[in-house]
Image 1 (spheres, rainbow, N blue to C red):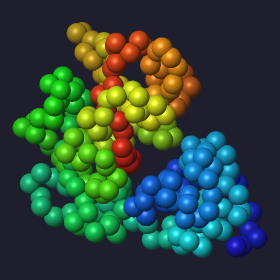
Image 2 (image 1 turned 90 degrees about the horizontal axis):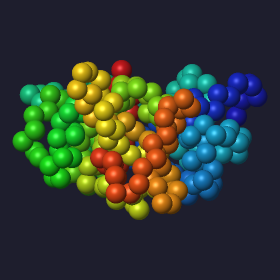
Image 3 (image 1 turned 90 degrees about the vertical axis):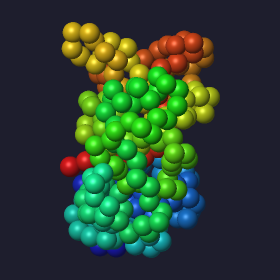
Length: 250
């Protein structure tokens, strides 16, 4: 390791570490096990809560060939982590973009419809995944990242309440089949918020929040300070589904 000293931006390092983990096609827990560190420690780094130790950086470089300089500064080679993107409905071939690792095998990818908030709410309201809904674009995800690919759709994030994890404009794979709060504590959920969609009729909107455990209420907490915390009784469960994967769309 070079003796060069880099300034450490915890949030930026966390975002790059998340990219490095996603690029391997494994879970964060599996990543932690392979480098011999706790999942909680890795999670704290990914969330920008703590800085990585020199020992951790050395292990990541050794096991996964991820550049220490890139992890710390964003400069240099990220171990050839290349990202790939959207496919138009009428285009059967894949084309490069920034978002999902391209070195994954083609037969391991699944195309998910990119739906608007209105369409996602429509799917949610009907209590089932309606495949007839027209999608303008499809998003490629690694199938093993998703618990139920057939019940998962994509949508774009509006607002920045989940930065740095989900920036405005991010594309999120939202599993609309997972709505049980008991299964989602500590997860990022797509949440239906009544009367926040703008316009004269004030339609419903979808935002993303952490689901925290706080009996007897459902408490949905944003990543960013200054955005409202939602606190609702279980009978008013507004969960659309669980966020299972995301990337920033440039």
